Each structure stands twice: as C-alpha cells, then as structure tokens.
Length: 245
Length: 131
Image (tube, rainbow over all chains, first blue to last red; front, side, top):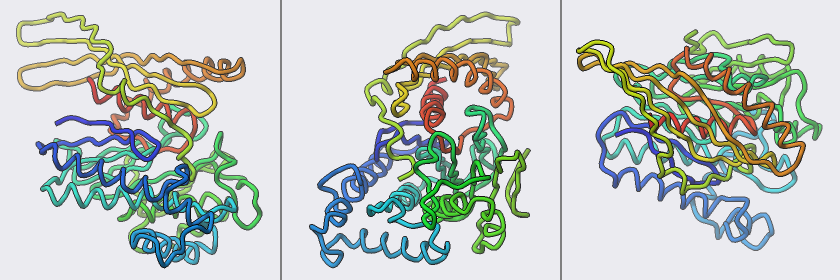
C-alpha cells in the first residue's frame, strides 16, 4: 500500500504505509480524526471547544476527551512557564496540542490493527512508526524557515514524533503570551520525542521564548530533543538530536 | 491554532492522477527507464491563493530493483490579488529549485510550519504518493 491523503481537521493529512493493511484500519483513523475535529475545532461554532469558549458549555458537562486534553494543556502551560498557553490569543484554543494528540491516538488505532511501519504527516507535524521500509529508519526533512522548500536539516528516527513551529508568514499566529508580541531572534524550533502532542506544544513554547528557547530545550526530559534555527543563521541542537546530515 | 487556517484542500483532486505523461525508453534489455509525472492536490495557501505542485520522476528498473530520481518540479497557482500573484510567482521558481536540492537528501517526509510552503509541502507530498 502506498501513501494516502485525507482532508481532515482543516488540513490534508498524509499517511504513508509500508506494509499491507486493510482499508478498515485506515478508515478508523480518518473517522477518529473527524470526530476530534467535530469536538475540538475552533472553526466550528457547534464544537465543544467553541461552546466552552462562549460559556455555553460547562467543563463538567464536556466530553471526557475535552477534559483530558484541557488538563494536559494546563500541565503543559505550567511546564513551559506559560509559553504554551491555550488562551494566548485571548480565546480558548487547544489546537496546538490537539493535533498531535489526535494523531498519536490514531497511531494506536493503526498499531492495534498490526501496523508497525508507517508515517503520518499532519500539516508538517509528523509521526514516524517503525521504519520507512525497506529502510530501518525514516528520513524526515526539516523545512528551512527562510528558504521555503529547502531542507535545513534531516533527522533519522524510528517510533518518534517530529514537530516544527516556525515564524515567517505566520508570526502573527505564534505570540509570546507574556508580551503579546511575536518572538524575535528565532526562525523555527523542531522537537523530536515520544509524543507528538507534547512535541508540538514544546515546539510552540520554545519558539515563543525566542532566543531563550535553546536553553530551555536543553533541560527537556523524557526523550525530547530540539533543533533551533536562529535569525542570525545559527543552528543549535541538543546533544541527542537525531540529526542525520 | 498555528496551522489550522492554513490549508483548505480540494479533496476531489486527490483522487485524480492528473498527468501520467510517461516517456518510456529502454537503454538495455535488462534496464527499463520510465519517466512519470504526477500532480499533487491543490492546496489553499491562505490568502495568497492555491498551489498545485507536480513532480517528474525517472524510475529506473534493473531486474527487481527500482531507483527513482526526481527530475523536475513544476507548479501552478491561482491568486486573488496582484500582491498574491506576485508572491506566488516569486515563490514557485524558488520552490522548484530548492526541491531539486532537497530531493538529494532523499527525505520521505517534511516537517515544517509556514503558510505557502506548507501548502506546497502538502501538495508535494500528495504528488510524491503518485509516482
């Protein structure tokens, strides 16, 4: 089976499977992501997140998945010193965690169907399961933030998440919650690690920290590694970052 | 959300392999070379317009082994304003050149986070799945 693309959660999601798999397992993945979108979308007026934001729904009455996600987001807000904040824009928006978390749960659905070697790319945030058969690992390019199609670095990983938060053309979307300003001095932050939702939140937080991000990422635990591209062209990575090139 | 607003994809175009302009030629009896062209999905690059990427790849089959080399990257775009036309017309040649550089790294997935290039990456990704 080759790769398939499905439009879910407001973006095309690519699934690259290197083994035979029944279509049913893939359908379960898309159905799960559609459910997540219906519940968590900030663009759907009737999603639970939209209703929570408008005060029409109490957290006690929300779906258990919503309670779980918002709880994890609060953990991450504390862990990142407030730099990952679902209310950074003034309106409840847990999307920075939801996408990776949803893909991570989707991964367990595919693994339950016996899949071991596949990759999912959700809008630039990637989960790599097993290897890119026949290769032992997957090779993932990190987009160069100033040269939109060139690859700034290549990582080789198995069973890992790769999430990137970047600046230009989207500076208005990632703000330092403490200043309300876009971060300076940093172009992009890529995090690798065991959980895509956490990696995505860490990437967002480290990017929002600006030039303080690299020092913060150096203290990450739990198998998370970082590569930061600074505006002056320097590329800083943590010692265990799985860079291949 | 950082990326949510970025891309609206026409799901219909995904199912349609647009171009299969195959120019086959045979160098030796044991070696088969096929050039294929595949188009990616059209991706909405936020307010700038839509981007469609296509990829030309040369598949060389020797015995049971097939190697692929990406020969060219093309693309088309729509635009809403003079400014977005300008941006896209500037961006596509750059994207093309850098794709050809990037492919030498033989990456299978791309992690990134930008407007037009995210649309590009996704369209490219869907083109790559077709060759």
